[in-house]
Image (cartoon, rainbow, N blue to C red):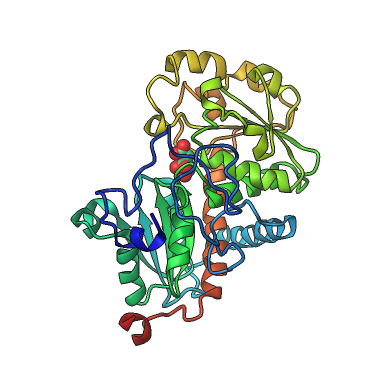
Length: 369
Ligand code: NCD
Protein backbone atom coordinates (compact mmCIF):
# COMPACT_ATOMS: atom_id res chain seq x y z
CA UNK A 1 0.00 0.00 0.00
CA UNK A 2 1.48 3.35 -0.94
CA UNK A 3 1.33 6.58 1.00
CA UNK A 4 -1.22 7.83 -1.52
CA UNK A 5 -3.60 4.89 -1.11
CA UNK A 6 -3.21 5.10 2.65
CA UNK A 7 -4.13 8.76 2.49
CA UNK A 8 -7.47 7.83 1.01
CA UNK A 9 -8.11 4.76 3.11
CA UNK A 10 -11.01 5.05 5.54
CA UNK A 11 -10.22 5.33 9.20
CA UNK A 12 -10.92 2.36 11.42
CA UNK A 13 -12.64 3.82 14.50
CA UNK A 14 -10.13 4.80 17.09
CA UNK A 15 -7.08 4.02 15.03
CA UNK A 16 -6.77 6.77 12.47
CA UNK A 17 -5.80 5.65 9.00
CA UNK A 18 -3.32 3.19 10.38
CA UNK A 19 -4.61 -0.08 11.67
CA UNK A 20 -3.27 -1.13 15.04
CA UNK A 21 -0.38 -3.52 14.47
CA UNK A 22 -0.77 -6.89 16.10
CA UNK A 23 2.05 -7.92 18.42
CA UNK A 24 2.98 -10.61 15.91
CA UNK A 25 3.23 -8.38 12.87
CA UNK A 26 4.15 -5.03 14.31
CA UNK A 27 7.69 -4.00 14.86
CA UNK A 28 9.99 -1.10 15.00
CA UNK A 29 11.16 1.06 12.18
CA UNK A 30 13.83 3.48 13.04
CA UNK A 31 13.85 6.78 11.15
CA UNK A 32 16.92 5.51 9.37
CA UNK A 33 14.91 2.55 8.15
CA UNK A 34 16.68 -0.08 10.29
CA UNK A 35 14.21 -2.58 11.61
CA UNK A 36 16.44 -4.03 14.36
CA UNK A 37 15.43 -7.43 13.07
CA UNK A 38 11.90 -6.96 14.35
CA UNK A 39 9.02 -7.49 11.91
CA UNK A 40 8.10 -4.48 9.78
CA UNK A 41 5.22 -2.15 10.57
CA UNK A 42 3.83 -2.22 7.08
CA UNK A 43 4.30 1.52 6.98
CA UNK A 44 5.21 3.09 3.68
CA UNK A 45 8.94 3.65 3.57
CA UNK A 46 10.09 7.10 2.68
CA UNK A 47 12.41 9.86 3.61
CA UNK A 48 11.71 11.00 7.15
CA UNK A 49 12.47 14.68 7.51
CA UNK A 50 14.51 14.03 10.68
CA UNK A 51 16.61 17.12 10.21
CA UNK A 52 13.61 19.41 9.68
CA UNK A 53 13.37 21.44 12.89
CA UNK A 54 9.59 21.81 12.45
CA UNK A 55 9.29 18.18 13.50
CA UNK A 56 10.40 16.20 16.54
CA UNK A 57 9.98 12.54 15.69
CA UNK A 58 12.68 10.42 17.35
CA UNK A 59 15.83 10.50 19.46
CA UNK A 60 17.55 8.01 17.20
CA UNK A 61 19.57 9.94 14.66
CA UNK A 62 20.17 12.98 16.88
CA UNK A 63 23.83 13.76 17.56
CA UNK A 64 25.39 14.15 21.00
CA UNK A 65 25.52 17.93 20.45
CA UNK A 66 21.84 18.06 19.47
CA UNK A 67 20.83 16.03 22.51
CA UNK A 68 22.87 18.19 24.86
CA UNK A 69 21.43 21.37 23.31
CA UNK A 70 17.91 20.01 23.89
CA UNK A 71 18.69 19.04 27.50
CA UNK A 72 20.11 22.53 28.10
CA UNK A 73 17.10 24.24 26.48
CA UNK A 74 14.78 22.11 28.65
CA UNK A 75 16.74 23.01 31.80
CA UNK A 76 16.35 26.71 30.92
CA UNK A 77 12.60 26.25 30.51
CA UNK A 78 12.50 24.46 33.85
CA UNK A 79 14.35 27.33 35.53
CA UNK A 80 11.67 29.67 34.20
CA UNK A 81 8.82 27.34 35.23
CA UNK A 82 10.11 27.23 38.80
CA UNK A 83 9.80 31.02 39.05
CA UNK A 84 6.01 30.75 39.05
CA UNK A 85 5.61 33.61 36.58
CA UNK A 86 2.41 34.15 34.55
CA UNK A 87 2.18 32.57 31.09
CA UNK A 88 4.63 33.77 28.45
CA UNK A 89 3.71 35.02 24.99
CA UNK A 90 6.32 33.12 22.90
CA UNK A 91 3.57 31.09 21.24
CA UNK A 92 0.83 33.73 21.33
CA UNK A 93 -1.45 33.22 18.33
CA UNK A 94 0.10 29.83 17.56
CA UNK A 95 -2.40 26.97 17.49
CA UNK A 96 -1.22 23.60 18.76
CA UNK A 97 -3.44 20.55 18.14
CA UNK A 98 -3.04 17.57 20.47
CA UNK A 99 -4.19 14.55 18.45
CA UNK A 100 -4.21 11.58 20.81
CA UNK A 101 -5.40 8.49 18.99
CA UNK A 102 -4.43 6.36 21.97
CA UNK A 103 -4.98 6.75 25.73
CA UNK A 104 -2.80 9.13 27.65
CA UNK A 105 -2.91 11.07 30.88
CA UNK A 106 0.49 12.51 31.66
CA UNK A 107 1.82 13.06 28.14
CA UNK A 108 -1.34 14.81 26.95
CA UNK A 109 -1.76 17.03 30.00
CA UNK A 110 1.96 17.79 30.05
CA UNK A 111 1.89 18.98 26.42
CA UNK A 112 -1.28 20.93 27.16
CA UNK A 113 0.22 22.69 30.16
CA UNK A 114 3.48 23.39 28.32
CA UNK A 115 1.65 24.91 25.33
CA UNK A 116 -0.53 27.03 27.60
CA UNK A 117 2.44 28.27 29.64
CA UNK A 118 3.96 29.55 26.38
CA UNK A 119 0.72 31.30 25.44
CA UNK A 120 -0.43 29.00 22.60
CA UNK A 121 -4.03 28.21 21.61
CA UNK A 122 -4.49 24.55 22.42
CA UNK A 123 -6.98 22.23 20.75
CA UNK A 124 -7.32 18.73 22.19
CA UNK A 125 -8.56 16.14 19.75
CA UNK A 126 -9.15 12.46 20.42
CA UNK A 127 -10.52 9.78 18.12
CA UNK A 128 -13.44 9.03 20.45
CA UNK A 129 -15.43 12.22 19.81
CA UNK A 130 -14.38 13.06 16.26
CA UNK A 131 -15.01 12.38 12.60
CA UNK A 132 -12.39 9.63 12.76
CA UNK A 133 -15.33 7.58 13.96
CA UNK A 134 -17.23 8.56 10.81
CA UNK A 135 -14.55 7.14 8.51
CA UNK A 136 -12.47 10.27 7.93
CA UNK A 137 -8.77 9.61 7.56
CA UNK A 138 -6.34 10.98 10.12
CA UNK A 139 -4.52 12.85 7.36
CA UNK A 140 -7.73 14.53 6.18
CA UNK A 141 -8.54 15.45 9.76
CA UNK A 142 -5.10 16.92 10.40
CA UNK A 143 -5.32 18.82 7.10
CA UNK A 144 -8.48 20.45 8.47
CA UNK A 145 -6.45 21.85 11.33
CA UNK A 146 -3.80 23.00 8.86
CA UNK A 147 -6.45 24.83 6.82
CA UNK A 148 -7.73 26.42 10.03
CA UNK A 149 -4.26 27.79 10.64
CA UNK A 150 -2.82 25.40 13.22
CA UNK A 151 0.97 25.41 13.32
CA UNK A 152 1.79 22.25 15.24
CA UNK A 153 0.22 18.85 15.78
CA UNK A 154 1.28 16.58 18.61
CA UNK A 155 0.44 12.99 17.66
CA UNK A 156 0.10 9.85 19.75
CA UNK A 157 -0.79 6.86 17.64
CA UNK A 158 -0.92 3.06 18.11
CA UNK A 159 1.05 2.46 14.91
CA UNK A 160 4.81 2.82 14.66
CA UNK A 161 5.77 5.40 12.06
CA UNK A 162 2.46 7.32 12.02
CA UNK A 163 3.87 10.76 13.04
CA UNK A 164 6.76 10.51 10.56
CA UNK A 165 4.32 9.57 7.83
CA UNK A 166 2.09 12.54 8.68
CA UNK A 167 5.13 14.84 8.69
CA UNK A 168 5.89 13.78 5.13
CA UNK A 169 2.33 14.47 3.99
CA UNK A 170 1.65 17.85 5.58
CA UNK A 171 2.50 21.09 3.85
CA UNK A 172 3.25 23.60 6.57
CA UNK A 173 2.61 22.15 10.01
CA UNK A 174 5.20 20.75 12.36
CA UNK A 175 4.65 17.30 13.90
CA UNK A 176 5.74 16.19 17.37
CA UNK A 177 5.71 12.50 18.20
CA UNK A 178 3.97 11.83 21.53
CA UNK A 179 4.48 8.06 21.24
CA UNK A 180 4.01 5.89 18.14
CA UNK A 181 3.21 2.25 18.68
CA UNK A 182 6.30 0.35 19.69
CA UNK A 183 8.70 2.73 17.95
CA UNK A 184 9.67 5.84 19.95
CA UNK A 185 8.44 8.23 22.60
CA UNK A 186 11.05 10.93 22.10
CA UNK A 187 9.69 13.56 24.52
CA UNK A 188 9.65 10.88 27.24
CA UNK A 189 13.21 9.99 26.21
CA UNK A 190 14.30 13.59 26.54
CA UNK A 191 12.67 14.04 29.95
CA UNK A 192 14.42 10.85 31.07
CA UNK A 193 17.72 12.35 29.88
CA UNK A 194 17.05 15.60 31.76
CA UNK A 195 16.24 13.62 34.93
CA UNK A 196 19.47 11.62 34.60
CA UNK A 197 21.44 14.77 33.81
CA UNK A 198 20.41 16.06 37.26
CA UNK A 199 21.04 12.75 39.04
CA UNK A 200 24.44 12.30 37.39
CA UNK A 201 25.76 15.88 37.63
CA UNK A 202 25.62 16.26 33.87
CA UNK A 203 27.94 13.32 33.08
CA UNK A 204 26.51 10.52 30.94
CA UNK A 205 29.79 8.98 29.76
CA UNK A 206 30.68 5.75 31.53
CA UNK A 207 27.45 5.66 33.54
CA UNK A 208 25.38 2.48 33.68
CA UNK A 209 21.59 2.20 33.48
CA UNK A 210 19.34 -0.85 33.58
CA UNK A 211 15.97 -1.05 31.82
CA UNK A 212 13.74 -3.77 33.24
CA UNK A 213 10.49 -5.16 31.90
CA UNK A 214 8.58 -5.30 28.68
CA UNK A 215 11.34 -4.20 26.29
CA UNK A 216 9.63 -5.75 23.26
CA UNK A 217 6.59 -3.46 23.37
CA UNK A 218 8.26 -0.36 24.78
CA UNK A 219 8.70 2.86 22.83
CA UNK A 220 10.02 4.37 26.08
CA UNK A 221 12.89 1.85 26.09
CA UNK A 222 13.74 2.51 22.46
CA UNK A 223 13.97 6.27 22.93
CA UNK A 224 15.99 5.88 26.15
CA UNK A 225 18.43 3.46 24.54
CA UNK A 226 18.86 5.67 21.47
CA UNK A 227 19.58 8.80 23.54
CA UNK A 228 21.77 7.15 26.16
CA UNK A 229 23.85 5.15 23.68
CA UNK A 230 24.64 8.40 21.86
CA UNK A 231 25.67 10.05 25.15
CA UNK A 232 28.02 7.21 26.12
CA UNK A 233 25.94 5.49 28.83
CA UNK A 234 26.03 1.69 29.00
CA UNK A 235 22.48 0.37 28.91
CA UNK A 236 21.61 -3.16 30.07
CA UNK A 237 18.14 -4.57 29.51
CA UNK A 238 16.48 -7.45 31.33
CA UNK A 239 13.06 -8.99 31.64
CA UNK A 240 11.14 -12.15 30.78
CA UNK A 241 12.56 -13.83 27.66
CA UNK A 242 9.19 -13.49 25.92
CA UNK A 243 9.36 -9.70 26.33
CA UNK A 244 12.90 -9.25 24.97
CA UNK A 245 13.24 -8.91 21.19
CA UNK A 246 15.57 -11.63 19.86
CA UNK A 247 18.25 -9.27 18.59
CA UNK A 248 17.77 -6.53 21.17
CA UNK A 249 21.56 -5.87 21.32
CA UNK A 250 21.27 -4.25 17.90
CA UNK A 251 19.48 -1.36 19.59
CA UNK A 252 22.77 -0.56 21.34
CA UNK A 253 22.41 -2.34 24.71
CA UNK A 254 23.48 -5.46 26.60
CA UNK A 255 21.22 -8.17 28.04
CA UNK A 256 21.39 -9.48 31.61
CA UNK A 257 19.98 -12.81 32.74
CA UNK A 258 18.70 -11.63 36.11
CA UNK A 259 17.66 -8.34 37.65
CA UNK A 260 19.93 -8.89 40.67
CA UNK A 261 22.96 -9.34 38.43
CA UNK A 262 22.00 -6.34 36.29
CA UNK A 263 21.52 -3.96 39.23
CA UNK A 264 24.91 -4.45 40.91
CA UNK A 265 26.51 -1.03 41.27
CA UNK A 266 24.45 0.69 38.55
CA UNK A 267 23.74 4.41 38.39
CA UNK A 268 20.02 4.16 37.52
CA UNK A 269 17.20 1.78 36.76
CA UNK A 270 14.25 2.45 34.48
CA UNK A 271 11.30 0.13 35.14
CA UNK A 272 8.75 -0.24 32.36
CA UNK A 273 5.03 -0.72 32.54
CA UNK A 274 3.62 -4.12 31.59
CA UNK A 275 1.79 -3.22 28.40
CA UNK A 276 -1.27 -5.45 28.58
CA UNK A 277 -2.82 -3.69 25.59
CA UNK A 278 0.03 -4.61 23.25
CA UNK A 279 0.71 -8.09 24.49
CA UNK A 280 -0.40 -11.27 22.76
CA UNK A 281 -1.96 -13.60 25.29
CA UNK A 282 0.46 -15.98 26.89
CA UNK A 283 3.64 -13.86 26.95
CA UNK A 284 3.53 -13.76 30.75
CA UNK A 285 2.52 -16.71 32.90
CA UNK A 286 1.25 -14.42 35.67
CA UNK A 287 1.70 -10.94 37.05
CA UNK A 288 2.72 -12.29 40.45
CA UNK A 289 5.47 -14.34 38.84
CA UNK A 290 6.58 -11.20 36.98
CA UNK A 291 6.64 -9.20 40.23
CA UNK A 292 8.63 -11.97 41.93
CA UNK A 293 11.35 -12.09 39.28
CA UNK A 294 11.41 -8.59 37.79
CA UNK A 295 9.73 -6.25 40.28
CA UNK A 296 11.85 -3.57 41.94
CA UNK A 297 11.89 -4.31 45.68
CA UNK A 298 13.82 -2.40 48.38
CA UNK A 299 16.33 -5.31 48.59
CA UNK A 300 16.95 -5.21 44.85
CA UNK A 301 17.42 -1.45 44.55
CA UNK A 302 19.87 -1.60 47.48
CA UNK A 303 22.27 -3.37 45.09
CA UNK A 304 22.61 -0.18 43.02
CA UNK A 305 25.35 2.40 43.56
CA UNK A 306 24.55 4.58 46.60
CA UNK A 307 23.57 7.47 44.32
CA UNK A 308 21.55 5.21 41.95
CA UNK A 309 18.06 6.46 41.04
CA UNK A 310 14.80 4.72 40.14
CA UNK A 311 12.66 5.90 37.22
CA UNK A 312 9.39 4.79 35.62
CA UNK A 313 7.50 6.52 32.77
CA UNK A 314 4.14 5.87 34.41
CA UNK A 315 1.46 4.77 34.70
CA UNK A 316 2.89 2.57 37.47
CA UNK A 317 1.31 -0.76 38.36
CA UNK A 318 2.24 -0.63 42.04
CA UNK A 319 3.22 -3.95 43.55
CA UNK A 320 4.07 -5.36 40.09
CA UNK A 321 6.77 -3.25 38.45
CA UNK A 322 7.67 -1.42 41.66
CA UNK A 323 7.06 -2.02 45.36
CA UNK A 324 5.29 0.90 47.11
CA UNK A 325 8.42 1.56 49.19
CA UNK A 326 10.48 1.92 46.01
CA UNK A 327 7.95 4.07 44.14
CA UNK A 328 7.76 6.46 47.12
CA UNK A 329 11.30 5.93 48.39
CA UNK A 330 14.31 8.27 48.44
CA UNK A 331 15.78 6.95 45.17
CA UNK A 332 12.55 7.49 43.22
CA UNK A 333 12.64 10.22 40.54
CA UNK A 334 9.17 9.42 39.19
CA UNK A 335 7.63 12.79 40.04
CA UNK A 336 10.78 14.62 38.93
CA UNK A 337 10.30 12.91 35.55
CA UNK A 338 6.73 14.24 35.40
CA UNK A 339 7.82 17.78 36.29
CA UNK A 340 10.69 17.64 33.79
CA UNK A 341 8.20 16.57 31.13
CA UNK A 342 6.57 20.02 31.13
CA UNK A 343 9.95 21.74 30.72
CA UNK A 344 11.02 19.44 27.89
CA UNK A 345 7.75 20.00 26.06
CA UNK A 346 8.03 23.79 26.44
CA UNK A 347 11.49 23.63 24.84
CA UNK A 348 10.34 21.39 22.00
CA UNK A 349 7.12 23.27 21.23
CA UNK A 350 9.09 26.49 21.04
CA UNK A 351 11.77 24.96 18.82
CA UNK A 352 9.22 23.49 16.41
CA UNK A 353 7.02 26.62 16.33
CA UNK A 354 10.08 28.78 15.61
CA UNK A 355 10.77 26.62 12.56
CA UNK A 356 7.25 26.77 11.09
CA UNK A 357 7.27 29.29 8.25
CA UNK A 358 3.90 30.87 9.14
CA UNK A 359 3.29 29.90 12.77
CA UNK A 360 0.14 31.99 12.92
CA UNK A 361 -1.15 30.09 9.92
CA UNK A 362 -4.37 30.63 8.04
CA UNK A 363 -3.35 31.23 4.49
CA UNK A 364 -5.91 31.00 1.73
CA UNK A 365 -3.13 29.13 -0.13
CA UNK A 366 -3.29 26.27 2.35
CA UNK A 367 -7.06 26.38 2.64
CA UNK A 368 -7.43 26.15 -1.15
CA UNK A 369 -4.95 23.31 -1.68
C1 NCD B 1 4.23 5.55 28.34
C2 NCD B 1 3.57 5.46 27.00
O1 NCD B 1 2.38 5.66 26.84
O2 NCD B 1 4.31 5.19 26.08
N1 NCD B 1 3.63 6.40 29.24
C3 NCD B 1 3.89 7.72 29.15
O3 NCD B 1 3.77 8.31 28.12
N2 NCD B 1 4.32 8.34 30.25
C4 NCD B 1 4.55 4.27 28.90
C5 NCD B 1 3.47 3.26 28.98
O4 NCD B 1 2.31 3.49 28.70
O5 NCD B 1 3.84 2.14 29.33
